[in-house]
Length: 151
Image (tube, rainbow, N blue to C red; front, side, top):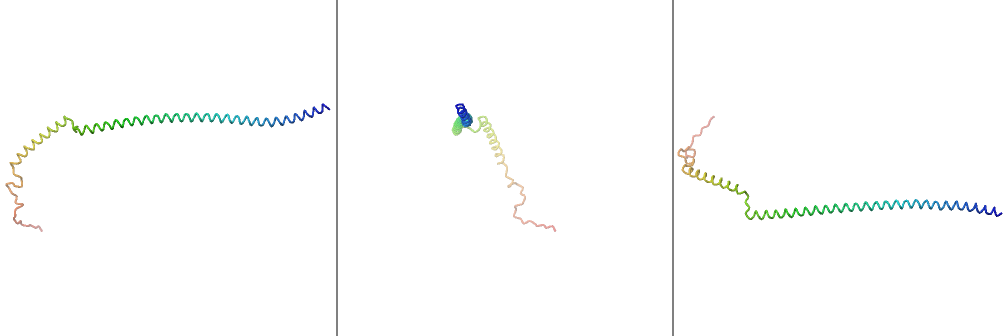
């Protein structure tokens, strides 16, 4: 009888061990699946953090470039403003519109024209205007004209 009891206990233990293994093995499989998902999620999170860090780094570089460009533009604007102010102040202080050579040529041309006008004016004074010429045409005379009608 001891053998039968041992055999029954052995069979009951085998059956209970089989069911216990099934229960424990399914939870261990779920745990393995969950552990794999956790590892996968952690890897995705680490990659996302790297992508965000790269994006922020490139954004910072672009902002630095924009800042440098703006600084350069501001310097150019200041230089242009200073040059414009200098040019306006020099122009009001008597900066000539034409160069010295051009002014000399203009002055010579003006004196030649004035001399020519003076000689023409002297010649014109000796002659009478055509309105007062010695041979009147009779156009403005107070005489009645004959009217001719051609029919």
